[in-house]
Amino acid sequence: MVLASPVVAETLRIATFNTELQRKGPGLFLRDITRQDVPDIEEAARRIAHADADIIVLQGIDYDHGQVALSAFAARIADHGISYPHLFSLRPNTGLPTGRDLDRNNRLGEPRDAQGYGSFSGQGGMALLSRFPITGHTDLTGLLWKDLAENKMPKDDPGHDIQRLSTTGHWVVEITPPAMPPLSIMTFHATPPVFDGPEDRNGRRNHDETILWRHFLDEKLGQGAPKSRFILMGDANLDPIDGDGIADALNALLTDPRLQDPAPLSRVAREAALADGGANLNHKGISALDTANWRDMPGPGNLRVDYILPSADWAVIDAGVLWPDPDQALSEKDRLTLSRHGLVWVDMRP
Image (cartoon, rainbow, N blue to C red):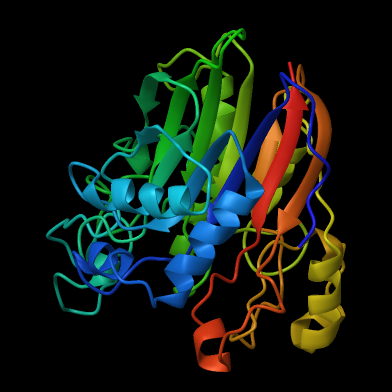
């Protein structure tokens, strides 16, 4: 893997990475971090260190109160030479019980009955790692879906009065780099717009999780928009052209004059789309923009779902996507445990 050559002082490298490190039970993520022979954890730590970002947002990280597991994972990254002294995470909606039969299968307490899909509270949450101090945050994770203006929530939804909009979370995190004004990281991890029925509940929710950011920037949520430079980033679980989902909200963000799209291209992604075939052969988007390689799924093909969209007042210097090293000595079984997502990075200056 090759990154751009070292960047000059006062250039920030921002990254987002769906690690897919979530485990099947509480405490298992921390248990596996303490081992030295768990390929997906080791490869994720190595790739994060190789990216050498100043600020990185991670998805697919199990949450625990007190950040014990997150601190242990940051220590594993430090073993590869990159230290993140400032960590941030909040309890996600994943696995948070509702007491309702949200999927209408006459059974309670299942993953699809939670505020966000999860087998236990905190499964597959988010985290932010930073070299610079975190000086404030706004948490939009508790916003009820019904309270979003012009929402697409099904009118007969069994969780109409209690369902939160965020599958995982929506955060605005303020960070203050040295010799720079504060900047705001706006981040989220939306639901996949599939795995439902003709009511298209997940497709509707994915749309609204994305359009929330337009409402936030338009100051329609009772919260002021960032007064300083900002970066919108995370896993939208949606491609603007290919695959399933309602793409108009995402395309509205990609063309919003307050934002810019660095559109990082990847030779690895282009070659993977050709090699995997299947649905990729009918895609209309640019395969080199794909950030997820669903090699074990016959349906959607490879898609662009992970984004970093700086505000228009940043000068974007470079951008790219980091994939696992194909020469890494792993068995095929172990390789299949690695994240199917690339690590997306952008270099920028104020």
